[in-house]
Image 1 (tube, rainbow, N blue to C red):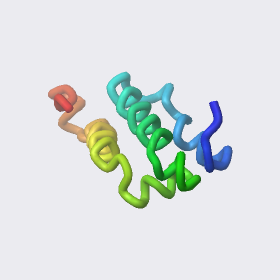
Image 2: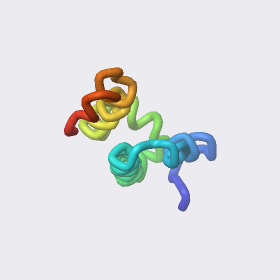
Image 3: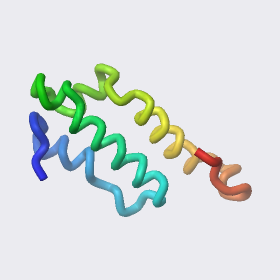
Length: 85
């Protein structure tokens, strides 16, 4: 799979590290990646996915992924379980 306008480092950044994430986080990260790669910012303007993310594309998926990652660091989640995102 090629990433239009993305350097190999940025492509690895978007796809790398999926193995050590919980299943729900992997799904959210994959959704965010697909949203960025299919956005007009990447396809038509030939910007990198990282630039498009900084400009605010796919913001709701980014917030959801961040909340899921943050819940992994929440010490209460170890005892009570993860929040239902």
